Amino acid sequence: MSSKQTSKSRYKSRYSPDAYVTAAQYIIELVCEKKAKFDSTELPIKFWNLPAWRTFFTKNLRRVHKLLREFDEKAVINALNLKCFGNSYSIFTERFLDLVTQEQGKIDQLVVQQVSPQEINRNTVDSKPRPHKIKPNLLTKLDDI
View 1 (cartoon, rainbow, N blue to C red):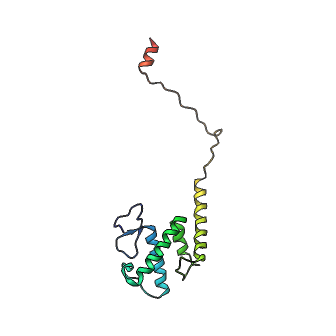
View 2: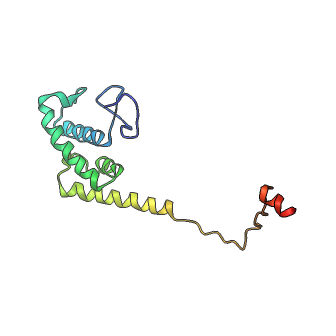
């Protein structure tokens, strides 16, 4: 965890004051938050140090790293925040993978739409090529002689 925002640690931690975390750590915080809500408990600051949460945190952190190899981090975060995921907290289910796949498809479509190049009709553009300028150098001076 970093107190500064970097290219890797760009998410503000919810459970570590004034710290930025990686995408995987942020996602696992969201998962643990959902589990705590499901169990009707509250998560304390730096809950991953508590024995009750340590195993759940590390086990799911490995799964999150696996997910991030396949999917974009925004797709996983969006899938966690969907209403249809609701009271669930397990990221090991097929249902969650289906939601992440759908969100990844949406992100991929947006990327394709943004990247599509616009064609320029050169017939409508009133432009002329630049005039060729020759800088005087030693060879041009010799040619003049």
